[in-house]
Amino acid sequence: MNERIIGPIAAAIVGVLLALGLIGLGMSLSAGFLKYRAQERTVEVKGLAEREVPANLAIWPISYTDTDNDLPALYARFEAHKTAIEAFLKEREFEPAEITFGPPTIVDRQAREYGEQNGKFRYLGKAVVTVYTPKVDEVRAAIGKLGDLGKQGVVVSGEGPGVQFVFDGLNSIKPVMIEQAVKNARESAGKFATDTASALGKVKRAAQGQFSIEDRDASTPHIKKVRVVSTIEYYLQD
Image (cartoon, rainbow, N blue to C red; front, top):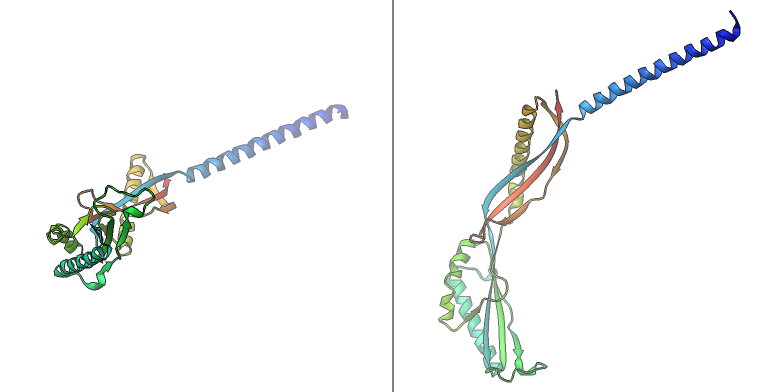
């Protein structure tokens, strides 16, 4: 056979073989990619855990005010107010270590840049007593009796921050709540797997959300709602 004819035939055969090889390689890679993608079938779910807990700490600032034109007399009355408040709190079984008395702050109205000449009293005084205690129920009961101080001439002011109720026992309930959130997430993922005719596989990724502590509602600030959300991604299997 003429060598000029054999050359093109051989080249054509080589080309066909090369094309078949590339097609086979492409099919192999495609099958591998599809297999990999099948292994990557996942579902991401969120698991919620909530519980209500009573506050175990109260921070109660009691602000009181008074006025006078005589500064020494005003300071003397503040001392009398302090004694009355101390007796009021002691009667309700608060310990001295739970009570902090702040010094009075006195404002000279006439000493201001634009002196209040029309004011009846020259001096205005304010002071704060802070109760820091785990006796939450006692604080709630005492707040309702503040009128007793008014009968003794102590003017309790509504200005400033009100009582704060705090829950500081988060570490004691964290493990149980995390377990509940994870269980809730797995139940949701299992339901999804069942609905899609799949089997639930291992965890691919998990993220633990932040715990939040809020008042249950505006009327019951002494009851807290603790909440956490876990985000978990599971593999799905056929």
